[in-house]
Length: 391
Ligand SMILES: *Cc1c(COP(=O)(O)O)cnc(C)c1O
Image (cartoon, rainbow, N blue to C red):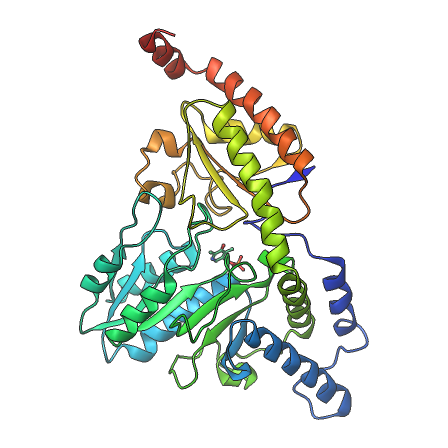
């Protein structure tokens, strides 16, 4: 099997599993209890919180563990909306946000909040001038992702944060794809709230964190006990937090060399596909792009057919985001960068990981050339096109 869907999720490292197991077995006690074993676990969890905080130049008290990246996104949007609704009910997001953000603001729209959706250019970049012009007296929050999960485009978050602060509104960024890949400094980058998720960096599923700048008011997500400073109740999930810490440690230790290796594979993939397959385009910015992400659109191709043929060869890939595959609507991200429906339908996302090899990439390229040509040979649209072109 060749796994090229690391933007959907990643394999949990053995070291990460090993780091978690004791917290299911001998260290099972409730970390909130007062006896010695619990206090020891509480200390381990505090170390984890401090380590994770340090990776984004935050303080441990600014890290709130959540059950996922989606939960962190929901909380950031809804928690700020509830806490700030006396100041205003206007929120700005980009058109290419993850569904966790898009659906959260839709819920708020039904409650009387007003949402502005920022356009992106053909590379998927937001326009800073449009952002600045969209901010109003009653704007309480701007949410723009650090990097996009479908096309890999890296947004100018530091500049976005600066504009937000100049106009006295808060800035949230969904950094789920960027965390552990790009350097993020919440202070330098003018970030008030930031979402992450462990399973995108070889950690376990079901754990993420929301960074909330000190002193900032956010409504609690879950009422109950005083876990997560009384804002997200529920017995602390020691094992997943320790797994998250281990995954982050491993990721940050080798971040630069991993990025370089992955980028080498990505560029090889891009070069071969562009050279060997006609009528293809790269989606997303070529320069401002996550190293692991590749997204192509092949004209005269149905994405589903392509994915099934790849799957038959043991190649795992995606046509859009994991959440949208299975639905027939083209991805909102591809439409936002201006792709016509027909071309958006022929899209393929390959997201590379440290475990992939050059041989695997070559195998994928060899087969992609064949698959595309086979599928096109069955396409009446392609036949007409070829006739018209006189080829
Ligand atoms: C995966 C992802 C999420 C959701 O994270 P989960 O932990 O799977 O809920 C949110 N935003 C982006 C950009 C993602 O890639």
